[in-house]
Image 1 (cartoon, rainbow, N blue to C red):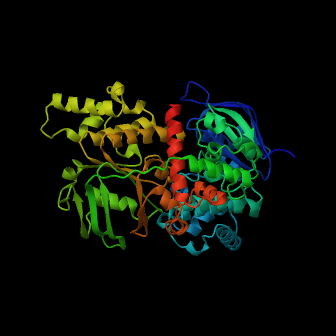
Image 2: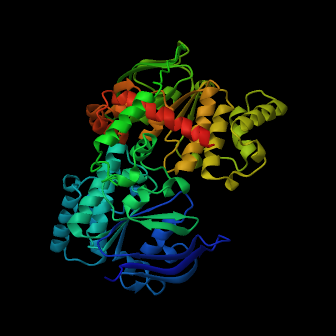
Length: 570
């Protein structure tokens, strides 16, 4: 069989780069295959995808060497329009590719460019919408839809043109856990219905493997380091070696001493077969663990009491929200997109005014305090550091919040330098922000909040889109701050973050708090997981398969050992 995509000794170097991003790529992908391309940030996986869909060289200029053929066409001699009729791309941010005022108009875009007759166009639009179950939203504006619904519209917009190749660039990046799981199921369904060649570019390996793939291609430093069947890749140490997180259930089986090489169905947790000797090893591992028992005896630092909120002339967003947070806690706020998590944080910080109820800081009602006065106690760090940064130099950005507070320039310098040392940024104090990595920029935004002296820091999706190395860098830094006494509140879709780092979780759905308990208790409660649009942890599945009576405690024991293993490895 002839490959539908063929790279032969292919290299690519962006005009702005000194070194090639892709180096001597040899790769063949065959019709009807479902491929996962993974790798850490900077590995070249997204650049490889952009070569396949024609964004390189037609939108991103650079030097190409070698050969790339897509569905019989040499990309050097083609055009982005010609490639778009063969390759449909779904971006990680659906908002970036909407062109229609309604769902139907957006799906129709490719057909309109092909001058398809109206009657035929309506038929094809409806067929595409039904394949992704979005046919009931045809008259809605795309921007009014949920994250998962937007993904469905994007998928319909590319499959309507009957393309042979579907390319998904980090499809899970902006989705809540349940919607991400549904997206992977939907991609698999489209693959089976159309027999399209599917390429998924993603670093969240376990989430993609919720449904089977044919091959996993692992990239690092612009080169293909491995091209293996999933079971072969999972039985190797390649994920760990190249900075990716292997599936949690796989790590757990290794801790228990299970012979990974002899397992059946290792590439899909739903099909994993555990023999009796495997289950016995898991139970014996659990029996050896010291059961963690962390209790925070501190006083309450923040309380929300019967909070209601609605935007002007709009439906109510928050309903009777009440909870307490103790000093020194690290807390997760979780739930589906649009559940009210970020709105609650804005109310706490004073960016939005609650219609009823009270917010207390150290027992004092702060409802009437201004945003500036609240910021002295409660800091808020946005998801994208570029939306917070306004100064070209690191020192000036961190100093911005304490200028005009009556401090002398020497006092400002002293506070900024002290904060930069805490954040590991002191050596960069005279650098421009443009020279920093994304993770370092994240630290700058945290430093600009910490210099104000807050006792509580709220972070919105601090690890969104980050690979394992950057995720660990950010979260270990937050843990260090927490150990210094700062109370940390994290709004997140990352279920592993919730398990690994936080003491407890407040679970939202439809503007209401429906649970307040540990992350392990949340993810071992199947009814709660379904109600809040979360995703069950594969550790719960392993505990159930092995006959563990207390899966919550089992998960806590795993997190404790995993933390020790990582700390010992540093």
